[in-house]
View (cartoon, rainbow, N blue to C red):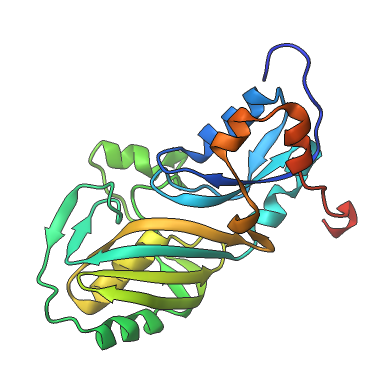
Length: 239
């Protein structure tokens, strides 16, 4: 909680999260900079990811569950031939495989096969709790435990650029989807392994990163400018 008087502001703020910031870093920075009370967010982005983070201010925190349930759209990149323990570029390499036999046709067919309702096994390096303990904390100790598959819906998994072993993609998915797991599963289908090398969230429900403010702008603006960026809350009867 900020020291001194607190500014009671209710609403939504769309932020373009920079790389290497955690979602909590963004929340803490905004809360401290503008002396706010309650601030939350709708869906964690990993530090390596950039893009849309929907912040909830004041009474807006009541909407957290609603907006976290919205579909998301991401753009990203993956690398074939290398598997990591986190399923993304931040993890330690656990296996390498030849990828030269994979064609663009193979890649796009494998992506198409991972659309619709599918089951995902959450990565060990994640915030999901099992028996009250976050998986990533167990992973740091070298522990690997069995995780129950979770149903998610992949509305779209399009390969948009191919420069093997790299490929770019767009994913439109339901809440709870791990894009890095989707990349790893794609690699397993192709028999060569893969990991996610970049990720950017473009949309969350009706909100777009095109309408978001970057952190440098936020850190430099005054309270009046900040308040002009805050979006009003929807009608609470919709909750």
